[in-house]
Amino acid sequence: MAQVYDHGGGVRSIEVPIPDNPLGHTLVYVVDTDRGPVLVDTGWDDPASWDTLAEGLAACGTAPAEIHGVVITHHHPDHHGLSGKVREASGAWIAMHAADAAIVRRTRATRPERWFSYMADKLTAAGAPEAHVSPLRAARRPRSLPGFSPAAPDREIVPGELLDLPGRRLRAIWTPGHTPGHVCLHLEEEHPARLPGHGRLFSGDHLLPGITPHIGLYEDPDDTTVTDPLGDYLASLERVGRLAPAEILPAHQHAFTDAPARVRELLTHHETRLTDLLTLLAAPLTPWQLAERMEWNRPWDQIPYGSRNIAIAEAEAHLRRLVKLGRAEAVAGSEPVAYVAV
Ligand SMILES: [Zn+2]
Ligand SMILES: [Zn+2]
Image 1 (cartoon, rainbow, N blue to C red):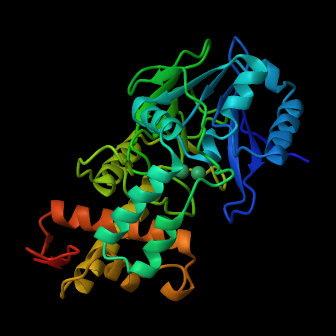
Image 2 (image 1 turned 90 degrees about the vertical axis):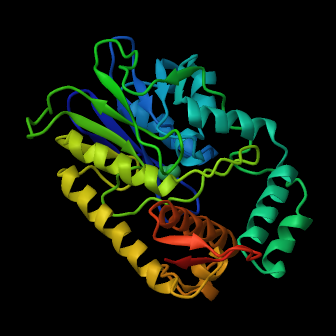
Image 3 (image 1 turned 180 degrees about the vertical axis):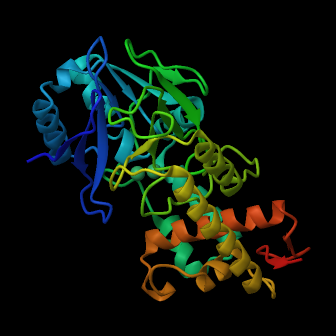
């Protein structure tokens, strides 16, 4: 049975399961418009998830074939996975920010082998031991890899503009950090229960009530720009805090209020983490060595392979922020490059 929740004012959510994932589900929002329902995100591409989405839509009095449009907060497969199927069933448009649409296009065009060799080079440069890197060098095209043929969007979400949702006011707020093209969507309408604040905000993975979203690197085999995703994220958080929406409708967990308080918690969390890292960087460390010493939800030797790669990217994002703030620097001539507090 699909779990459906009525948020009032023509907005409902459906819990669409993410198989084998501790997050459990993605909240797919169904927004009524004058031309039919519009979805905010679609959920993981899996037969059971699709069935749940269809059941949930039936409980909302509609069906996949009735969907008018799909608005995607960011390209991750737990958000964009089922978009192609929804479009096939209904002819709906799919809208996404240009930066994430570029990732989708690249993912569709890039052979997995190229991706594996890019990752292997990157991990070597971060100081990963050969035992960690060699499986990637040996990897060949897998039979199927989720997320390697995401649906190409057909509309661009332009920051600051109202989306084309007949009868509704939904404005795109660009919130890069978790991905370069992550957007939050501000429903500029009075809260149905008249809660104080400014409208409601579909926050995707940007602002969640009980989880800190992963901030890694904007992995791009074709781009050598030194981006600062953590800096982007912190700036985007402040932006959303200033909006002061009456209620946050996130893509995981549950709806909540007092966005500014949650924003403050997250800013404090990251400031504490950066300060802790500076302590670790009293002696030079490679990103790999830093990740080994950082605090995770379990000891480093118990972190599975894929999660370690995510952890390295998170360590690198923090290092970039510290370098940009002038609080750490690369040790000249070190290979792989090591960083030290200044
Ligand atoms: Zn995500
Ligand atoms: Zn997510």
